[in-house]
Length: 180
Image 1: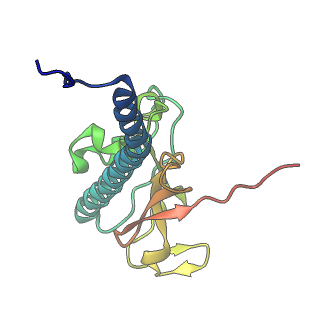
Image 2: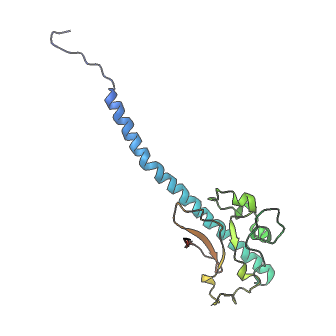
Image 3: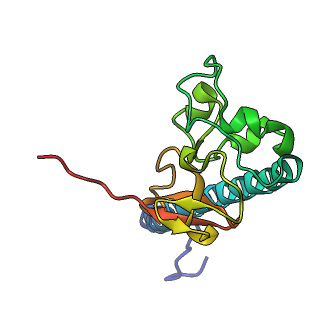
């Protein structure tokens, strides 16, 4: 070695290591919530698809039943209850019991009751094309027939998915009444 020359070893210092860890932590802090929201949005879209599948099954039911809506109760408290509900009456037309399970139903409502969705029993026995719901006469685009039982999608907005008589599905805002 020559006099006055220094020998440097290449390596990572502790400060450089801390900087890399801090950058990774900052990226994770940004990406994890974004990915969580993206997964929640995907589950909500799947729920919309399942409600559409129920609407398609209902159209097949109409073909067999002369365009008359089935008579069902809105929901049941337990799978053990022997009452006509959406997941029993339309099962043969939808073809899969899991079509009645919203992917965002993490509260076990599907497992307990057989469906994540309510039926609008105010339309029971009515003829499609001649409906009347609280004065909305023949306005199928505004008459709800099924919806989420709970706000399973609060992480993507405050509302529930709703299937309408004309077959479209959209999110409706929930109105919360605060009691004093």
